[in-house]
Every structure is written in structure tokens, then in C-alpha cells.
Amino acid sequence: MAVQQPRPFGALIGCFFQAAACSDSHCLDMNGQRVKPRHLKSPRCPAPRANGMRSGAGLVLAGVAAAGWVEWCEVRFSGVRGERLSQEEAERERAGTAGDRFPFSYTMDVLLYFSCLLILFLLWIRVKGLEYVLIHQRWIFVCLFLLPLSVVFDLYYYARAWLVFKMCSAPKLHDSRVRDIQEQVRRWKGEGGNRFMCTGRPGWLTMSLGVGKYKSTCKNIMINLMDILEVDTKRQVVRVEPLVNMGQVTALLNSIGWTLPVLPELDDLTVGGLIMGTGIESSSHNFGLFQHICLAYEIVLADGSLVRCTPTENSDLFYAVPWSCGTLGFLVAAEIKIVPAKKYVKLRYTPVKGIEKICEKFSRESKNKDNYFVEGLVYSADEAVIMTGALTDDAVPGQVNKIGHYWKPWFFSHVETYLKNNREGTEYIPLRHYYHRHTKSIFWELQDIIPFGNHLLFRYLFGWMVPPKISLLKLTQGETIRKLYEQHHVVQDMLVPMKCLEQAINVFHDQINVYPLWLCPFILPSNPGMVHPKGNEAELYVDLGAYGEPRTKHFNAKASMRQLETFVRDVHGFQMLYADCYMTKEEFWEMFDGSLYWKLREKLKCDNAFPEVYNKVCLAARR
View 1 (spheres, rainbow, N blue to C red):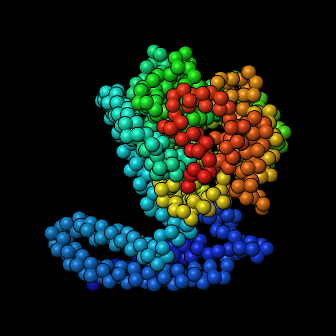
View 2 (view 1 turned 135 degrees about the horizontal axis):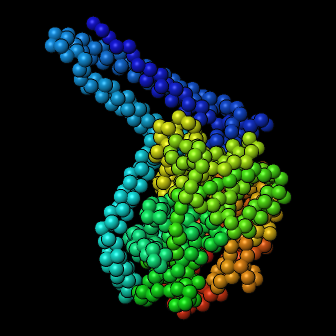
View 3 (view 1 turned 45 degrees about the vertical axis):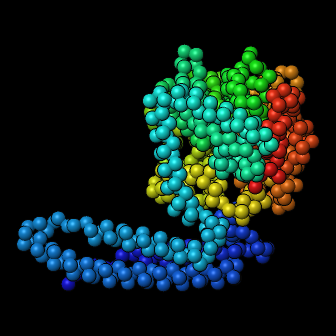
């Protein structure tokens, strides 16, 4: 009787538990002080702690036992199956069909393996608790559950958007949906209007780190508007609903030869969020912020009426809407400028060393109108790579880099190779790949969630599922992880005048020491509204994006962030409102110009209809 040899799957399970034990261990730094493991946003651990080793030993023993059980099952069932197969093969040989083996046994192998994995994982959760696993081995939960769910989400929304646009049903549905929103507002008013209103979109679906507490106390107005309504190539305008995201926009517009002048990087950023908050891209030094490429807004006001505002029609409302965070009315549609697209971005990488040279080079390239794109990644206090790009339809053979493919390295790590090798370089990147160059790795945040995510093997096997949806990460993070992020993690975008760039980098280094730093230039027109330059003329600004774990020994979330906010106010800069805001109400209105905003609040009778913007974005308003 031919008995199959045991497969090495049991050994794999043993390795799995050993790896979990290692990552579970608490650690000591070189001075003997306790530090958190890397997956809890702390430095790499040099030495395991004793009690961590004991708990790890328990997991190893469990892994050995599990491995032995799986091996026994494999031998036991493969023996029985081998006996049956040997009889079947003898019959087939007599019938001349020995080569046609029924795949049932192999299917059972796969099912057995995955069943064992699932059972062991569920038992582990049962013993340790779900919150423990989510905190200490979050990558397991992300890889097994959130990545597949993210794929399903994307497939559904992209298929839906494509079908709706092709069937031309969006404009008809749009009108009826807007009437429904108006009816909800009028019903709220008829009931006495004793509560503020806000959109009914769940807080975990937004791009801000926190979830607004006001969602549970305000009257939720359901706004199901997520379609591209019209593309008018003669007027060079696209009309969209507020929940359309950048992934939808690029997929459609690029396919017909058009694009947005300013197209923020992450797929899940919505038009509504980019207008009511703000948005920026490496082309913003030519076109301004996302609000500056918008031509018209359609708003449902507190009385249920629908108004259209442009720079010449209801202009005060047009300029007051950006940065208002939905506190003047409900955005139901927007008209946005589009421009002809080209196939590639010719991107040049230039490593620069020395903070003075970095700032001088970045400022000079940002003022050069021949550069369609300008971006900088600062990897340390005196090392950076400055990138400049131009649109083109022609590419040099051998220099095309399709960085958007799932098996490609994460963009920020690819850029760093030019710094490590101290060489300049030029590549041709397909336009849509360039637009979403930071999506796969969520800039560089994914390295803290899936530490091995940029490994070649992981990229080839599972890279097609990356990244996990930010909304799902928020939904499953739990209170403990949220507090850890708040105390040991920074996600901030600060907008400061270009002339203050060197000073800003130094302040960021002293207060948080987070690298890489993202540099993105933009021109800020002298328009009315909450955000404008100090003088009466347009001024060149730069966005400093800090995303990651602070490495300063004295870091304290509240104190350090308040120091940054004070610096930004002093240089007449601005803080993006999706991030944690530690300012007092008085400090907030010192940073932002509220003159037009408050005038519109009174004129449109918003005081009893919508919370004011500070009460939606301050730290106390989020959890």
C-alpha cells in the first residue's frame, strides 16, 4: 500500500506561531527601558523581555502541538486515501486511464489546510481576545479580513459607477435624490429644527482619523450622491456628485483623454471632502488647491432651497463654502474644470543634500512654470529627493515605469533608491499610475500596519489586494488602538509660505522628527474666504505632510502639536482640518479668516441648523 509522505504544512503552522510569539514579546531598549513593538508604532526592538518570552514560549508550544496534530491528520487521511487511490489506479491501468486522476483528494488537502488555519486563528482569538490580536498582531487581521473586504468594496463601487455612467441614468436619478434631500431638510424644519443637521454618512467612511461625535447628536440627512453626472468636453467641465472619489474620476476621465488640473493622490478622497475641506496635488503650484479648479457648487440650504453659486452668481457663498466642512449647507453637485490628458508623466528625480540646498532647489522648481508637477520627499533633516514632471505622449523605450502595478515597489521606497545611490534619473510613468503613486502604501503609513508589505514575495502574492480601505481600518481599530495612534502617531498637513520652508522643516524636526516629510507646493490666490495670503496678491505656499511615528524623546501629542500649530499661525499658515486640531476656538479663528463665513452663517440662518466649523473639527469633537 502506497502511503503519501506528510506535507510540510504542520511545520508552517509551527513557524506561524513562533513568529506570532516573537512579535508578541515586549522589548527593552539599549538602556533597559520597556518599549513597544514596531507594530505598535515604536522603534525596532533590540531585545525580548522575559515575560514576553514566557508568553511567546506558550505560543510556540501551542504551535508545536498544532503542527503535530496537522501532521497526524495528513498521515492518517493520506494513508486511507492512498489505499483507495492505489485500488482506483489499478482499475484505471486495466482500463487504460491511469493518467486521469480525480482531483478530489487535492481539493480536500486545500480545504483541510485552510480549515486548520481558520480554526487555529479563531482559537487564538478566543484565548487572547479580539482586541489583543487587533493591537499586537494587527497585520494578521488586516491580511486575512480587511484586504479581501477592500477588494470587494472596490469592485462594487467601480462596477456601479461604470454602469450608471454608461446607462446615462445618473442625471435623472440625481434630480430625484436632490428633491429627497430637500424634503428631509423641510421635514426637519417642520419638526421644530431643535437639533443641528449633518450628513448621514457614517463617520468611519471619512478620511479624517477620528469619528465625529456630532453624528450621534445631530439630525442625519441621508445623501446618496456618488455618481459622475456629465462630462462636457466643449466647455471643459465635469459635473459630479459629492461622494464621487478620485479613483472614479481618473478611471473615467483618463479613459476618454481628459483629467483634472489638480487630482489629489489617494483613491478614496471624495469631491465633497476636497471642497468642504481641501485638496492638493503636485500640480498645485500652477493651479492652486482643489477649490480653485471648481467652477460652480449646488447647495441645499437650511430652509431646503437649492441654490447654484459661481464666482459671479451668489459669489459670497461660492467663496465661503471651501473649508466650511458642511456648516453652510449640503453640497449636492459641483462643476470642475478639466484639461486634456497625455499618456505619460516624464518624471525627473534629483537627490539633494543640505537643508539650504533642498529649500533653494524646491523653491526654484516650484516657480518654474515649465514644470507641470513638483514634489519633494525629505528623508532626513538634510536629505531629500526633488521630483519634477511634465506631461507627454511619447516615452523613451526602456524608461517606462508602470509603478501602479501591484508587484511594483512602494513609490516612496523607489524614490529613496535615487538618494541611496546618489544619482539623478528620469522615468516615464503612465498618467493614472502617477496620480495614484502613493495609494498602494497610503504614502508610507502601510509599513507600520503590514511591516513586510513591500517585500517582493508579498507584493507578488497579495499586492493586488493592497491597500486596505482606510475606512475599514478605522472601523476595526478599537478604542485602544485609537488612543495609541493619538499618543504615538502623527498625521498632519501644515500649509506655510514657501519663504518659511527651511524654518518649518527645522520646527518639524525639533517637535516630531517624522520622516519622510512630504513637500507639495501650491499657489494661494488672494480670494475671499477662510484661507488667503496675508497680502492682496497670490503667494506661493508649501504643504508639509507628516505621517508616522514621532522619534523625538520629548514627544507629547498635545504639547508638541500645539507648538506646531503656534508656529503655523505665526507665519500665517494653515492646518488641514481632517487632522487632529489642538487649538482653542480663539486660536482657530486667529489662523483662519472668519469674516465672510460668519456673514454667511447669519444671512443663511445657519446658527440653529448646522454646528459651526470649529465644533466639528476640534479634538473634543472627535473620538
